[in-house]
Image (cartoon, rainbow, N blue to C red; front, side, top):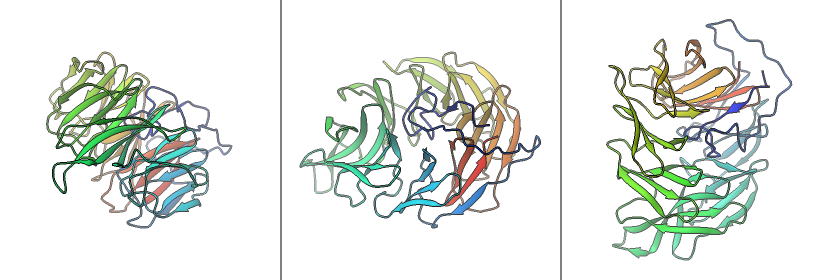
Length: 384
């Protein structure tokens, strides 16, 4: 029903950057309708289904839900009514391909669609521009990384510092989302790129991975670097931060102290083939292994609570918890949505469509509806 607390985690769909916080910055208003729960083992039927323009969505980007609206990153940027699936507003040319939908206090923040290097805030309810901010004459905003209660964090290019006609110095910057003023700018090492940073803001730390295989932690107040270290072979994941720890996927699951980078615990996969990137919800990590099993692991202890290895689809890449149900959304192959019992990990149902889209599934929650996308296919399911 619509009365549960909706929990979204930082490494997944929780575009407000909240960690271990119940739906912070999200509306979780109960919706009046009641849906009947299908019997065990039976997936619910969609309440509605829409197909967006085929190349009109960025399928790798988490969804944003707020105040009865679902926003799906793409061009045009469309806000769908979660009850009906009708477009409430649609804005062409404002959302770059692959742009994250970072949200705070009724605004969504995007690097400008005309590539002039500005950061733009839009009103989520109307799609209208609220403010537009530039970092300075020589600095252009290239991409957004994360958002917290004070700032939007972005990568930038410094056109005043170049080694050649094509190689410019990159930077990370913080922009106040109330005023649009630059809080700080910190230059990065030469050879780092401006388009490949994936990050999370949590407490006093901005944590990001990049394609030079570095994991970097900065102070959100000043941008000063706290520590950085090489992280192995994978960079294309958004770091999950919870309980003062940051988690590294790989052959083992590692928890590092966010303050100094030291290893706090390591979890071996017990004869299975390594771990994906976890989602943290309320003191528990949910993570798939490379054999399509789902683990629940204590954030602080690194101890396994349960392992579900009864899935008939690939292991989910992201998770979302609604009351006593854990939903998982799979990647691009052999995919679907799974519903597990939060306490035991038992499989309740699997929802798949018959569309060979070849894109990952994405999930968000709006009241008692589960919003799901599969590439350009958009579904509303009862969250039961």
